[in-house]
Image 1 (cartoon, one colour):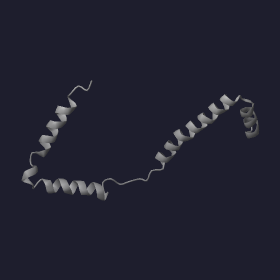
Image 2 (cartoon, one colour):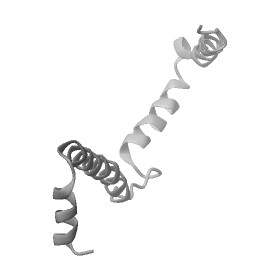
Image 3 (cartoon, rainbow, N blue to C red):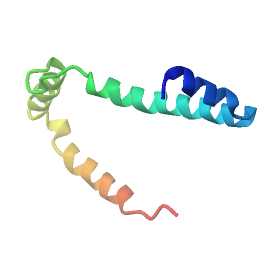
Image 4 (cartoon, rainbow, N blue to C red):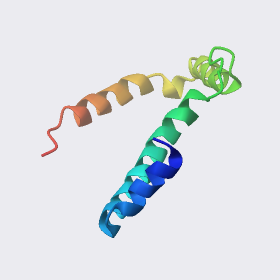
Length: 88
């Protein structure tokens, strides 16, 4: 089917059906635009990324702080308490 034939078929539809076709095309463009952009993401080296490095340096510095010694246990306890609650 040529583009002209397809367009003629579209024009032969009632107005409501034409609106449905237009909506469906918009839906498909939106759906596949996300897939295309996701496949074009830059390849990031997380091992050598400065942001990730910032986190690991922070962890190393916290080891020497006495006031943060039990923070991991505290956070773990809060998480277990909150995540085990039933949210009805």
